Image (cartoon, each protein chain N blue to C red):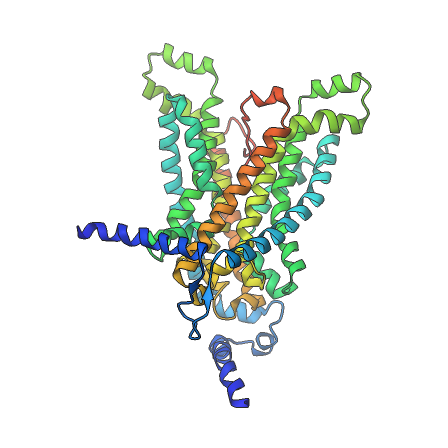
Length: 246
Length: 247
């Protein structure tokens, strides 16, 4: 039976982590017998995590989406839009946070700025590609019907580009949520606190933090996928999104 | 009262001393200048080259392992189309779980170290690679496959001699995305107890050490560029007939 023991250990580790989430536990290291974890603390950090991620995501969308739609609509700046996307993937998340701490300084706004930098490239590139890929015949037909440039964007190009645009939005959101985890290092409260501060929350806190971050990322991904489905024109839903960009 | 405060400060002072002991260019270093060039030159070989090489190894192992698995899954699902949706969902979940969470989820199972880091990074690459290999195989023209069958090729010969070679542009495009992203993510391997440039970014007072942040971050970006150029070169050599945008 001894070979089963590791399995039992693993299961009990995850059980302890689950306990940490549902009820406060005595801190394993605090001499004063303080309590850590529990729904209130988890909710508190979850809300902070969502606040900083939401602000960063909003900033990234506000900056990248209009630029990309305009470039895509006018058919300009292809090299620029693609290069931004490629360069963005090479940004090391940890170095970005370290750069923020060392050069820009701590603080909510600074970290939001850094996380937005991570979200801009996928949104910019995918939106540009999505708008560019819209069938030129459809755009010509819309023009022939007397639509203005703005109407073409709003009623033809944007709806048809929804799947590709959302690929960018989903990638950006997941990157931001993941990196917000290490925003703890820049002095921000997030779910990453549980993971990084093992000396406060103990092993079960670390594991609980990892479970929560993973669950949050999957929940956000599913939510955005649902929104995407709702916004996609019915005719497109039947087609498989062939060029789902990463 | 004062003694109490001093005791409190002691660990910080120790980190500081230890950290600055072996450093030349002391004026620039003690003021944490933007980039202490002399210090960078003096410490590059000892301090930054080894973790950079570890970083390269971590990425290479993860991407090669991810590619082997993704290729196997793609070949498996090539003639069994019904496998594609569940495999897309499965690899999608692995892709969505943030690497840093993945490291710690694996901790009770595989412990701290490079193995844990490699497993999480490999899992991350699967979605990108699988999707691109499947897309590449799907883009092979039916006439070409018919011609292969007409020449008397078996299914296996068709796959290895016609379909996979023709899918190379998409496959390499996927490898480029996976590799560059993995170089960036591998900086987090330090949290799993792994090697790599992340070691020079966290720990001690490294996070606020400007020269170190520029060196380690810059090298991570250079490694990504290096791998990307290598793959572009491979694409030109192996599949000179067509270029595709990474999807």
